[in-house]
Image 1 (cartoon, rainbow over the protein chains, first blue to last red):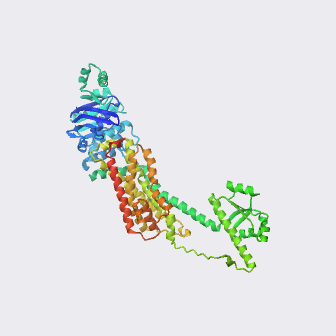
Image 2: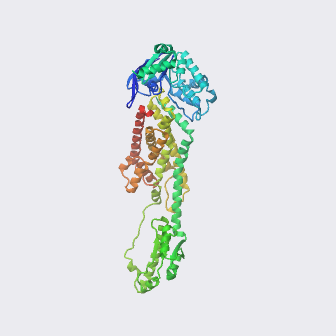
Image 3: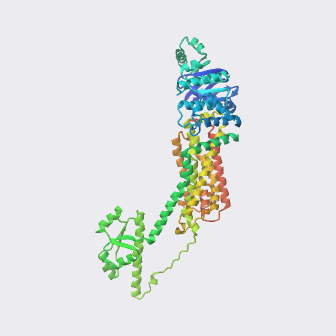
Length: 242
Length: 393
């Protein structure tokens, strides 16, 4: 469960996030939707404690990301935007490195790594050095790496970027599987259809603020548009003209 | 807590052992660069110093017919007299363009002046800016002066005066330097090769673990793991240190073997670089590893990309020569204060050892402790720096 409380973050004179609050409950998929530069990544980076907010904070299962960031990180599996791998290590070694750093005990590491490799269907290239992997292969390994310690909260920043149709489908299956096992899944995207197909709750962010926070149906009702894309545009206009 | 450090350390060592560029620079380039350059310089200087005495040198002379005795004398000094260019202008042009190194001109009135007992004029045309020409000119001049002295002595004897009259002083130079001591001059640059090899060994790791990791996009996921950033940074620096130590060991070893094959006796030197000195040198240079690793990591942390890091680190590679250079140019005598200066203290201690002179243990202690202290301070700064979020660029 992730609770975001009035986060503000500026980079120099650019106010990237201004007072974003929302909640992502366990057993649900929450989508962070917004145009490029809306503040999605900045919000997520505060959640996985790479950035410190200027004001406000967030709780991961009740643990404060600002005051107790190490404990908060223990409850998170994060896939940052454009996450890179170590090219001289095999996919399996990349995943195992993270498993060890997360403190998994020695005996269970091999099984865990093998399990996540099965789950993400990356057996074919698991023992190749990741140098020369395609974008889709890289993303899958990066996701496997983020999930190997079975975190309760999963944060994915634009996970479907650069994935082909097949890869996107298996990513979608994975997200639903995580949801069924009672995890809290929070992911960002600028692709409308993806969010609509997967998410229980949608948080629309524009201009560093939450424009709307509801289910897909709720958003359709509130904007008075049947088409979610129209609703999305409408919601963003509301913020930008406010 | 140590666990994270060790994990990061083990991963960086494995990762970089698989990286050909890192391996080549750490295990081949650094360790071999010094000995190869060294062998080259030493063989060249031996060749030069031998050629001075033995080899016949060609000497173009204009107007040989005016001074047959002088020519015979020069020939007896192993100078092969050949016909010079047609006239003085051609000789000057020839020397300017490098066609000739030295040209001697004997003017037509040479015989007349000699007979009259006035100083007979001989011209030596050369280019002092050209090293080879300068050496040939020196040899020509010394032969001419010797001829002048001999003729002068004969004249004095003919007048019933002892030639010793004109020699007021009898100067005797006593050189107390030992063969090991003389090698110190030449081997002075050796200490820099060790420092260079040591830095080269860790350079790519320092870049890869900071700027490289950021450029690849693997830094942010790493920082989102439940580990402290200090531990990550310390593990990376530890891995860098291991590569540097390896590079230093190889460099010392390759020098140890290379020196065996260099004909130092011919230069009147016997460098003291046996197994004991090699081991002592390793311990004297070891503190510099931490300093080098932390300063390279620190510099690379500030850069935005792999390429930028490379540019800045090549400056770090040269920086340790500065104190050594300043002290040798100013010809300063070793003193206690120098032992607080990293690279300079290692250099001076190494020279003492190679010269087979007693090594001051207080100096060793100061060198080791001050270098370690600076290294520890820089490592601490690195760890602090890793807490900044600006690191992500």
